[in-house]
Amino acid sequence: MRSAPDFRFETELIEAGLCRIAGVDEVGRGPLAGPVTAAAVILNPDAIPEGLNDSKQLGVRRREALAAQLHQTAQVSIAHVSVVDIEALNILGAAQKAMALAVSGLSAPACHALIDGNRVPADLPCPATPLVKGDTRSLSIAAASIVAKVARDRIMVDLAQQHPGYGWESNMGYPTAVHLRALQDLGITPHHRRSFAPVRNIL
Picture 1: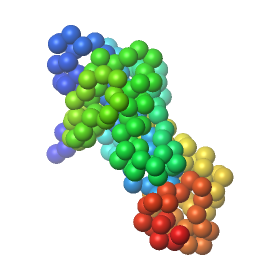
Picture 2 (picture 1 turned 30 degrees about the horizontal axis):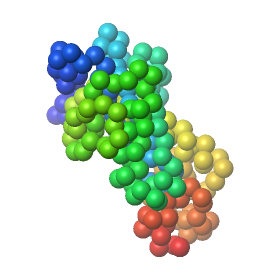
Picture 3 (picture 1 turned 90 degrees about the vertical axis):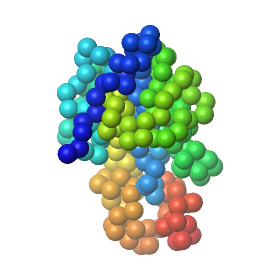
């Protein structure tokens, strides 16, 4: 049985005297199009929305509802890194940049960050702890995963209006059969990541 994330990592840091703990996560490494997006979320320990979990474990409506609650009850910062930067930095570098920008954008600076994954981004404005599978272990990281996913999905739905036929409103830029077929039939848009193999092969 899959365990749910909890607040124990945050509690340990708060008890050590660190008052603002940011959970940080990114989405959008795998798509062929669109930005990579990260969020940093500092939960209010007295107003944590019920049902926070890894965004991949939640349906669209639940994610949307939780994201709205988080924007009301928590400190939230979102950062997008464009396709231009993804091509310049590579996708790992772009994801790390997005996370650092999200933490830097918090209205009150974080005392410590909990980062999803096995590495701490460079240029982070505070000390941090990486947590592998952090979105399933830490409520703050789960919150960040939800906020980032909802924000990026909205961008892809908007881009789908401008570039119909690729299915971005449902595949969010991931390499589904519809998307790959559209690449062959319709060609490459300015929002495609040209260094990614399915796009590069068409070029």
